[in-house]
Amino acid sequence: MANEKTEKNKDFTELLRENGLKVTSPRLRVLNEITQKEAAISQPDLEKIIGKDIDRVTLYRILSSFEEKGIVHKIFDLNGTATYAMCTSNCTENHHHDQHVHFICSVCNSVYCLDEVSLPKITLPPHFALHSLAINAVGLCANCQKEN
Image (tube, rainbow, N blue to C red; front, side, top):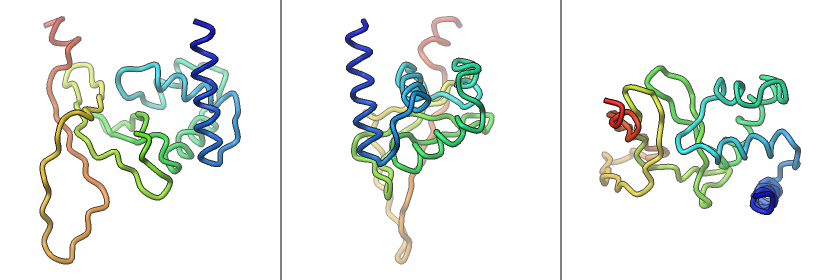
């Protein structure tokens, strides 16, 4: 288990350096918490998990810098709360490639990235340029289906 954690921190260290970010304990901690979750995670939920280790402003700045660098992408849940999930490796500072379906559970409000679901082809009118595509599917996640 300790070896797995060391390997993960090594990968996170490399990720931060590749993106021109200083390697700090708070940044490593946030990356670790985001990747531990099956679903996207909100800043308030991160605050609850991390507790007093990282103050709200620092956490906000970390998430903003991660989003700016293409490390995480932001998805809004059904209540309008921003949640964060890891980007794919082909996201960059200049262009996110997080164009995939997001599934939002209507019961627990969890947000899942569905990378394996194909997106429809979008044909735009002339002189329109697509910069981002967000498709949200709403229903019951596997956990909520079990409970109902």
